[in-house]
Amino acid sequence: MKYDSQLAGVKERVTSAQNILITLPPQSSVDELAASLALYLALEQSSKKVAVVTEDIIRVGHSHLFGVGQIQNKLPPTNNGDYVVVLGGVVAADGTIPSLEKMDYFPTGSNLNLVFKVVPGQKFEPTHVTPKREGGGFDFIFAIGATTLDTLGSIYTGNQEIFSKAHLINIDKKAGNAYFGTTNIVDPASSSVCEIMATLIQSLQLTYDGDIATNILAGIFEATSNLQSENVTAETFEAVASAMRVGGRKPIITDTQGSASANSTPTPVAEAGQPPIFMQPPSISTPAESFTVPPVAGMPHEQEPQPQTHQTFETAATPSAEETPSGEKAETITPEADWLTPKIFKGSVG
Image (cartoon, rainbow, N blue to C red; front, side, top):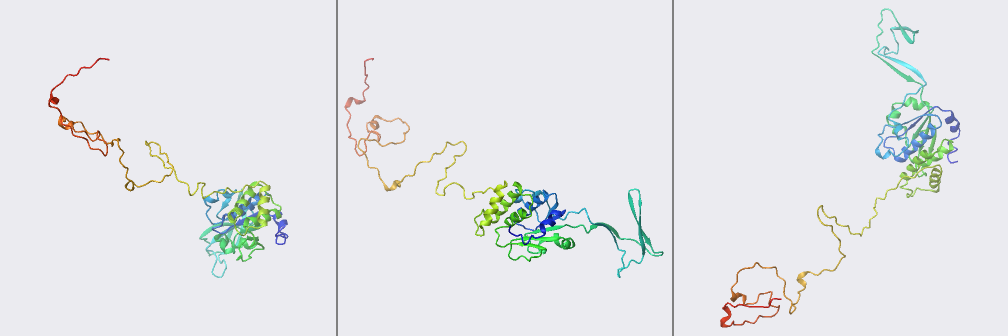
């Protein structure tokens, strides 16, 4: 497989390794983080003691990755190595301990007593006592996405001795990588670090299951803009296919454009307590002032009802506006002399 030349002899050493460290620089991408967690899960299922460490803060956007809760911000203690007790303020400027003659120890029950034989007349008074462990370290250290060791931040600067004693595997795709590892797997032509990691896991014959493959897919899709970027190659699709064969699930792609047409007209929403609003089809309207309705003979104009008032008969004799057809003038008629005399009208009862 690809990278077999770089991995010559590594497979056997990884098989026998017990303590393995995976490190990332601050501000790592989803691709780099997903690749690290995929490797973590694969090594853990091979019964290795594995730690993933970065001084960065894990964000909400990383919560979909399997194993994200196992990331630490400092190196964990190892079980092997020497236990050292540091006594402060007892060493002279020339590196000697003038007050100390020799040191001995003896057990008392379950306790171990350390005896410092002091030269007569001298004072042996440590300013502080600090226990620590040295020489344990890690069998392998994987640096993921780091161009140099210094980009790992305090994880490296505060533990340089541990890094110097371990077999360091440098995995990256940046062209500016310094090739600082004992083993360097740097491939600028690769679409993503997860594409490199998919090949590495299978080359080392580590476990490759659905959760691991889902992390691989998440990193590839993030680094390639859902397989749309120009750096996607046939090897990228092969990595995607192999991940899906073992049960990997593709990340959900969200349509940020929306499903509504840009030319559609939004439907107005009626306020609470108001009747629903119905949209009318568009029509061509003409301003009222541009068109005059001609008068129609015989059709009365509508007017608002007027309040009823007492009118004299002389006024009533003149037709009202409602009784006068539009466009016509009422004819004035002079009433007869007995018009104002009261009259009794009789009619038949039906």
